[in-house]
Length: 354
Ligand code: MRU
Image 1 (cartoon, rainbow, N blue to C red):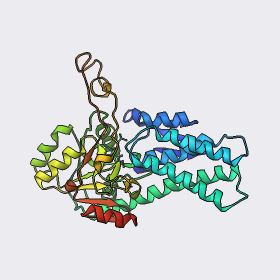
Image 2 (image 1 turned 90 degrees about the vertical axis):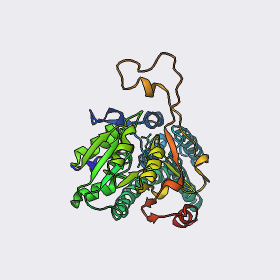
Image 3 (image 1 turned 180 degrees about the horizontal axis):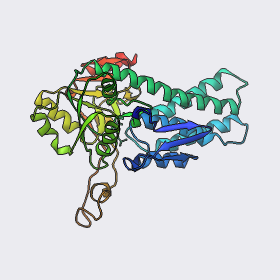
Image 4 (image 1 turned 180 degrees about the vertical axis):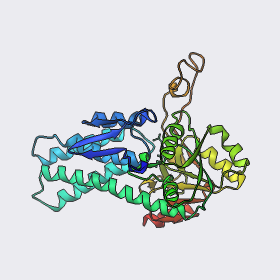
């Protein structure tokens, strides 16, 4: 089995299974999510993470949360869907794919209810499941397309720096910014990938390192503060990262530390590519200043990966999970519909047809 065939969320025989990414790279374990609380907890604790994968989990999660409704009152069912959607949406604030997927699920339900007077609760359940499947399948197709567009910007043998994990387990399949690396791998491009470890939760070391090594890609792990030296050494020809929410002006929120890499890339004259599916472009968010940034517990910085605390007792902490890369540092935005160049405020709107 190829690594990009490992799905972060699987739904078979009425069972929603989530690959527990907090156990990687040591253990590849799927957990079952039976309730809305299970799904909320899995997203909150990053068992499933990465913007598109969170969207996929939200779609199936909403279906799971209402499938056991025993009544036949469609209005009551609709209220339950809304309540559960709001609940799931409260699990994490930054990745817009979460609210995007939930809104999409609610919208199709409303449209179907409006269109047919004989629509039943059972029909509604079937429709929600079908829409969750569509979200997953479309994401897979979109990642494949992003891979092709991304690959068109790269040449064999290039050194590529990436931050966090925007790979297959962050999406339905293939990944966003790792998709061209997988396609390149199949076509003999021999990329040399440098993976930032991505403190404090180590998505780069644990997840990108795991994915790429397992796929036979030449990957070198570095600490986040080593990005400058590898660029200065001349080892990096392009930076490729994912995105959690891109505002209408092209500012993009991604894992904490991304903006520092972008600023360095500009200094060294290295192209900085952000891979952003259309579902992650949020035209209702005007600029990066309007993107909500998740703050997480300080223990993640000084305690989580260590046998004993690595900071004095009672230390103050600041632990934002994301930062915003200003659009002026982004060379191009790679989407499934094509490559977008500045001016982003005009071209992103054109791409989304809004
Ligand atoms: O906190 P995480 O692990 O969910 O953060 C993930 C990222 O920042 C990814 O780069 C982003 O979601 C894009 S995934 C295709």
